Length: 117
Image 1 (cartoon, helix red, strand yellow):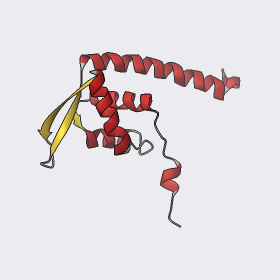
Image 2: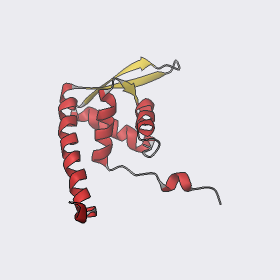
Image 3: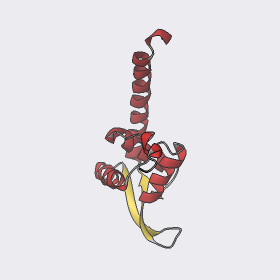
């Protein structure tokens, strides 16, 4: 019976939240898919882990919306990789998502801790 503790604290991301995190990560500069996943995991202090089965469909969806663009480049380990970057439309979408996120976190906080509000 293996140690399953690392999985107990993992948080599954809702589609909209994953999209927002990808857009936020790309605000720091162009990145390949694997690098986006690593950045989300690292900046969340290993709490958020994005599986490739969720990440790549999200990147495809964001490209289709025009929020990100992609081009093939050679990665730091000499592999051909698709690098994604935020578009002007994507920056606008990120601002809207951040505003919506702030409102949602505030509202959930009021429900979870009504005595403190």
